Image 1 (cartoon, rainbow, N blue to C red):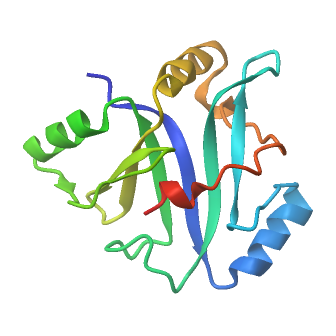
Image 2 (image 1 turned 180 degrees about the vertical axis):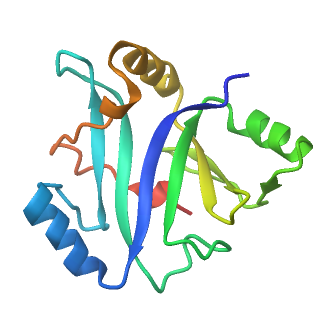
Image 3 (image 1 turned 180 degrees about the horizontal axis):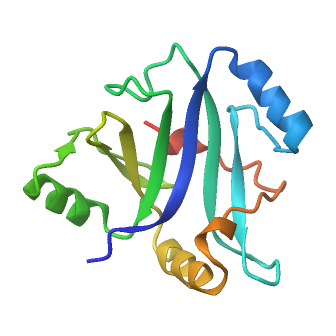
Length: 161
């Protein structure tokens, strides 16, 4: 079974999330939305939109969204079969939290890595993992997340329980 198929998102905390979001918007051109982050819509090598997004989000340092981890960041990894992978990780003795969730956008399950960082495994809607694998094979995983300013309808709060 293939385990991780790509990055679903990066989430990090800030003492002043509003100021930091503004800095990223003004200095780096990230189109930060009202919910506190951006959704980078994927494109093929020719720039045509494909199915998939990578989420970038700044959270308040006082929040508990990364609990029980004390880390200031959380990485979200895409997987093709969340429940099968969580089952395997439990059998292998990994610290898989019991909190799993599901929405119209995603299924997700948290795991605590050996140094205490919370890792969120995310199974996107059917079809997105195969598309990600094809794009990654053609141009490398580092180029999967290109931001599309037309993604205002995506609300990743649904992906970060």
